[in-house]
Length: 297
Ligand SMILES: [Cu+2]
Image (tube, rainbow, N blue to C red; front, side, top):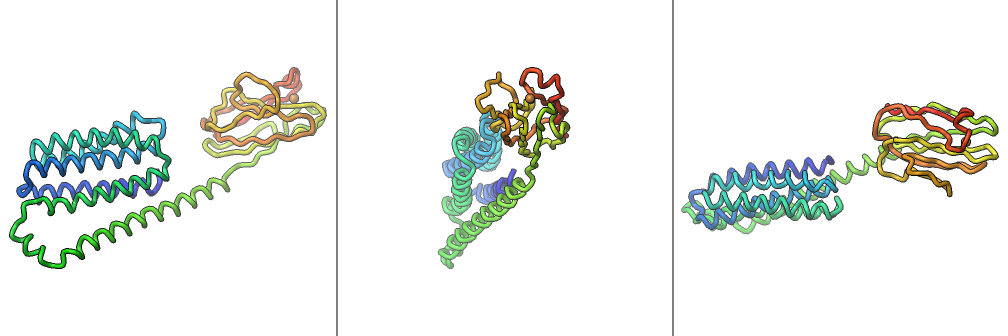
């Protein structure tokens, strides 16, 4: 989860509290239809926002993003509905259900960047709903007094505050993502394995890697015949983990093939701890000593 996720979740929680407070404050002055509309918009909007957020962050896991966003939408929608009446309750429930489903599907189809834009839009909509409460409520004596005062400045400053709030939320996140990717780059491990002429050994033959740390392995073949390096059942992140150079091998998990007096490089990220054996697949080479160990800790 990036900072932006926390920012959005914090904003949503804050909105949830505000929706409840507003519902309690205005419940006696809202007609059934008004309450239905409000809880429907609130449920749908929250469901959509959480759905887009989760759908884009957990791509390929539509089931969980759908369930979680429905729960969020239904929770917020029905809570406001309970306060406002039976029909608003049903409307809030259905709104949350539909918003969660649609949001998760939409998020699944979007990249993170695109989803952030949609989320900002949905957050703006959710905040706007807060202003709907006083607008559609039956006016009280206190309100008519208030409306005569600088009514224009209030929505304008609220809008300005919202825009600045969202921009800050986005900017801080961009800064965080940038520094994170820089860290990742500099933390890549570089390992080089030599094969000297007529030696039939890997140098070094024991390599220690860290789980989750990207590593770049270079196989340097100084011999006048070809050599390779293969590891069976080696769990890595889905990156290119084969470098055949015209060599055909049945689905190895990791394969590096270096023709005579050439070197070959490959980067991957080990995903499981354990000890793995690597060896040369050229007939006879393993037996002559072309074996080594990779320890992932
Ligand atoms: Cu070999």
